[in-house]
Every structure is written in C-alpha cells, then in structure tokens.
Image (cartoon, rainbow, N blue to C red; front, side):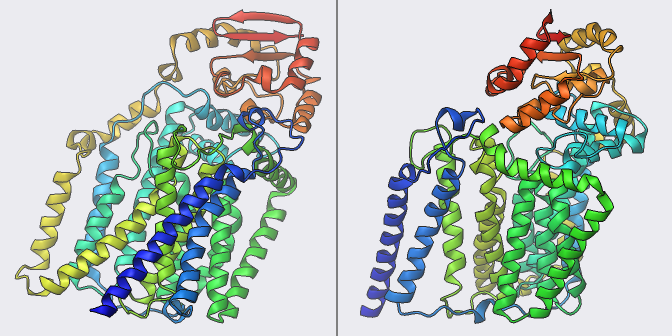
Length: 605
C-alpha cells in the first residue's frame, strides 16, 4: 500500500513539474525575441517589428522544455535508463489477415461512393487563391515554362502542372476542371489515409474482430477530417499527401525489411519531388528522413542508410539534368520562398492561454503535441510489453509528424492553418485510445466466442457504414456521368460575379493589341480570365516583397505597356500599392495614363 502511495505521489509530482514547465514557457513566450534587423518586406511582421525566427524559437521552447523535464525526471528522479530495445527496428512478422482486407475494401468502396455522390462546387471563384492555379497553368500551357515562367509559392505541381495536365487530358481549359482536380486529390488522400490506418491495425496483435472494431472506429473518425468543400476548415489538407505516402513506405518497410527493402529507393524520390508538390510539406518529408536515419543508426542498419542516401543523390542529380536550366530557377524560387514568405504573409503566432485571436485553438494544439510527445517518450523508459515494437514506432512517428507539422501554422497563424495541423494528432490519439479500449474489450468480452460468421458480420458493417455516412446520394451516383459532363464544360462566366464578367468583356478587346500585361493587383485569376500572359514571373503579386524582387519586376516592366493597377482583393493584406513602394513609385512615374473600370484601375504608357 505504501509503495502504491509513493508511486502516486511521484506521478503527481511529475505532473506538477510538467504543468509548471508549461506555465513557465507561457510566461517567457513573448520574452523570446530576436532583433528585427533591417528587413524591408512590408507585412504584419514589419508593422510589429517581429523577426520571422521568433515564432519557431517560441514554439520549440514551449514544446521541448516540458518533454525535457519528463526525461530528466525519469533519469535522475526515477533512476531509469533510456532503453532503445523496445523500439528497435526489425522485421515484424504478422499473420496475414485477408478478412480485414475485405473490410478495408468496404471502406474504400464507401469513399468512392461518397466521391460519386458529391455535388460539384459551382460557388463563385476565389479570384485570389484559385487564381494561382489558373493563371500559372495558363501561362505554362502557352510557353511550356515552369519556374522560369511563374514564381511558385506552394509547389509547381499544385500551382501549375496539375491543372495544366487535366486541361490537356480533356483538351479543354476551364475553372471547373481545375476544381475537379482538387476533388481527385482529396479522394486520393482519403483512400491513402484509410490504407495507412489499415496497414497499422493489420499489424497489431489483436483478434480478427478486435482488429475490425479498431479499424472501423479509427477509419470513421478519419472520414470527417477532410471533406470535398474547399471553403470549410479541415483538420487535414490534401497537400499532406506526400507525408502520408512517406508513412506508408516507412511502415511497410518496418513490417518486412527484406521483402520491402526496395521501398527505400522511393524515399529519395520523395525527398526532391515533394518540393514540386508543396515546399512546406517537403520540409517535413526531409525531417522524417532524418528521423529514419536516427532509427537506423540506433539499430546499426548502415546499409539501409547508404541505400536512402544514394537514392536521394540519384534523384537530385536526375532532376538537375532532366529539368536543365529550370532546375536553377527551382532552387532560387524555393530559397526565396523559404527566406521571404514568412515576412510577406506572416501572422504573429498568438501567445498561449492569452486572449489574442486564435489563441484558444493554438493552445489546444500545442498541448496535444506535448501530450503526444510525452506518450511517445514513455516508451523509452517503460519495461511493460503493453504494445509491440511496431505499434510503438507508429506512435513515435506520428507524434514526430505532429510536432513538425505545426511549422505550417507558425508563418501563417490563423485559425484555418492551425486547424490543418491537427489531423495527424487526431489519428495519433484515436489509435492510442481505441487501442486500449479494444484491448480491454478483448480481455473481458472475448470476441472469439461471438457466434457470428464473418460474412454476416462484414455485411452488417457495410449496412451500418451506408447508414451513418450522410453524404451518400444514390441519385447523384447514378447520374454521375451526366453531372460530370455538365460540370466540367460549364462556361467560366458561371463562376464569376456580375462585375467580374462585365470587366472581362470591357477590357478583353483592349488587351488584344498587347503581347502581355502585368498585374499589380492580388486578383491573380485575371491572367487566365483575360487569356493573356503576365509580362513577368510575378503574376501573383501577393508573393512579392523583397527589394531585390521588386527591382527584378521593374526591369521586366520596362518592356510592359499595360498594367492592371488595382482590383477587388487588394485589401487581403497590405495593398500592393503600399507594400511594394519601389514598384509603385516606378509605375506612377512611367504609366501616367489611367482608366477606372468598375472595381479595377488600369494604367498604360
């Protein structure tokens, strides 16, 4: 009894230390501040003299300090040693379970059914964000250029190549096809996430019905983490696809290293290709590669490290030769984004537990990240064999991804971006909680004694899934082909406001005598809508900020004769006329003729 009381006291003391460390980190949050320096890029950071490195430093301190306290407590107070035996990499041999695969097929079937049932998005165009995908793809379809044709802020596939490809497949350019591609991305993400969950649960020591129950509960939660409505705030973004692919490769490799050894070659492919998809997700991929290296070093898998390294070198060299001069543009573009975009679009991260905007959501996310890392850290000290090594590595990997993924929210700390970092944490805690729940049920209810055939049980599952997923629409599914044709060939005018349509009709005849025009407005879609290329790579004026980039734009504008000077979305941040003062002064001195058309102003020589 005394021993039990001592254990409880030690746990309470540990909890007290962790809570105290979090409160301390909250107190020093605003005290962690690096001098702003001589940055000239105007944005929220400029207005508040906030260095872009402040938020990452504050975040790492807030997360790492409580975890460090936990480690120090276990080592010096509990006198425990860090034990890597429980998380060693080895081939985990599990009994193949084809019946669970059937349930996985049911889930995928439901996802496809849901996909065929959705109403296609016919809402008005987001001339700012959707304009990125439309105008960059249009420009590339004209001249075949990549980074040398348009400055890329997220990734060349996401901004340009994807839309360009689907236009080429259908031999038709439309806003609807661009949106349909996004729907395809979401479907692929949903199926990939379900497969990842299946891969994890199929390799845990549960009975058949235990695995099915575990798989169904976790899968159903994942159903609601992302939907097909781009205007809703989701816990995942389809841009996380490379991260899910990486985890699938890593977990399959863990299951059977000898059989899936070749998958390591794909790691090198992802290390560079992920930059083409999304620059911020590529950073996470490469952090995960370092994570794999550490695991392999601990387990003396030097040949596997060599394989991944050679694969990385091969694909970087391959793209260097394959892309030719575009590769240099890719490197310069990517480095510019990493260096400047935080200052251009940054929103200062709210102080935890404060009354600042989005502080409540941010605080919850930060606490969940700490909790996930504490749970993962406990595996290094536990002597219990409550989990197999595979499941431990899964949870450690997911907590690490959750920790790294919050970087998305540090440079743009609004509610939507913070929420998009929570998806992997929800999967982590779903797996952790349901693991214990199913384990308890297996122990006391004994699924193996259920007198029900698998056929009847799986049929019941299918019926339940069809009933509880409200998005299934039989009529829409039957008429999918007809609805699809109607949607993708909708005229672009359908997606525009009355003012936008009228502006296009008025100005389009005026632009025909020019080879190109330059946007000095955030209305990025105008390049596509007017069917005329941008004169410079800076079609998305919002991404422009540094003096060096402004001077590059001015050099190009010496050959430019027409500028759309202002538009509808210029107040989505600091207007370009205020933010880009160097360019604005040049425009005013050179483009002296101006004309106001509805919500837009054009200037010409």
